[in-house]
Image 1 (tube, rainbow, N blue to C red):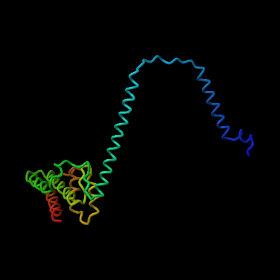
Image 2: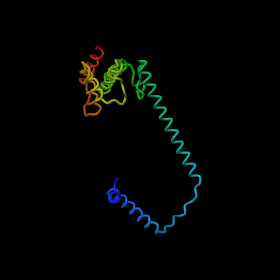
Image 3: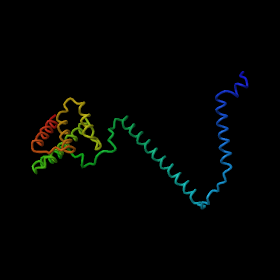
Length: 195
């Protein structure tokens, strides 16, 4: 057994004693202060309001968690059944038109001299082809760089790269579209449509 001297002289015991003495000293010092608290109005209605808001928050949080769990379970069950799961934040139907509609729009815009708009329409037609072939599903939040990364895994990404890089230069760079730019994009899309 340990002796009593060890129990009262150990560093741990001495540290606890020091903290206890410090706490007692602080309590003594603050008890000598005579500070009157200010008179606050009696708002009896505030407590029930706070409780009501708290429980409303808890109910909303519970419903949100249940909704997330429902979506997760539904997605898992759909994947098990082999049902394709569509992205929840997908684009509007107007964006996911048929590739042929984008092709016609590109030709119309090129005839009007709007080569930048025509290149954009061919770009969209290319993205729709990627989506239709289920190589890279269309997401409105996906950037050109993400599309390039996804198609780099393919065996023939060159025409897609040309469309995406042209779109990138026209939209985010200082490039100006001319008839030659449109013709390159047109040939790239025709290569995609034939493949």
